[in-house]
Image (cartoon, rainbow, N blue to C red):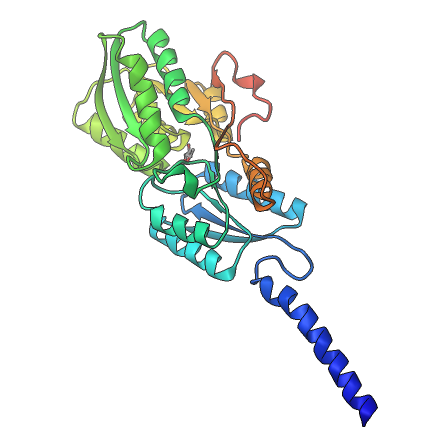
Length: 317
Ligand code: GYE
């Protein structure tokens, strides 16, 4: 009898010892030490975004990180973040669809001690609510496009702009950077600017509408390759020769854009790397370990046109 009760006391003591470890875990880091990360990706039908998602998934696999992937629109992204927080993930990667509307949920993540790293787009919330933004410098991309346009138009011509989402940080900055350059040349005029919602199909429709309305232009500046490819379809359908009758420059440097340059349709594209998985996890793991991370980590971009497109290290993304 006595022996039995001492065994019971021992078991009880053991249970008390391990209890804090089990409960402190909160469901994030699994018992085997696995790190869990939530990635809130934007629902968008573009090869650029698919490459980015693949990059994040591959890096998670390489590092043995358990990845919870959510692919939705902005409202769904906020809900996904709340879900990640409730599940007690160790860190969050967020590609914010638009720049606004994040303060509350980012504060909730911060209160829960979960670091958030922004991938590919920025947002308007105070910098103390997120750890780091890993992206291109979008205003730089716009300026690079602007300089190319000035040169190719010999400082004179009519431009139409295919805008990304006007509420999204890369679209706003790509337009600002571009106009910073263009505004210095009084004989270059931006005659139309409309959103093609980052989509090939919408890009085609907008250019079709301009052509039908009789808008005259020498050059199309598209905020991404997808919309430029749609514009090329519209020009061809109207019997025009894209790359010649009308010049086209865009941003992203996806593989299809390089193929289009090779065909002589697209004239130029400014690189914007979607391969952000390795840098994203590097920053996030540092933050999880309490190490300092730079607020902005900028990927370097180059412009590719007919003269140098064969030099891109991977032939596009
Ligand atoms: O250029 C575009 C995508 O946020 C930088 O989003 C990204 C942009 C990219 O839709 O193709």
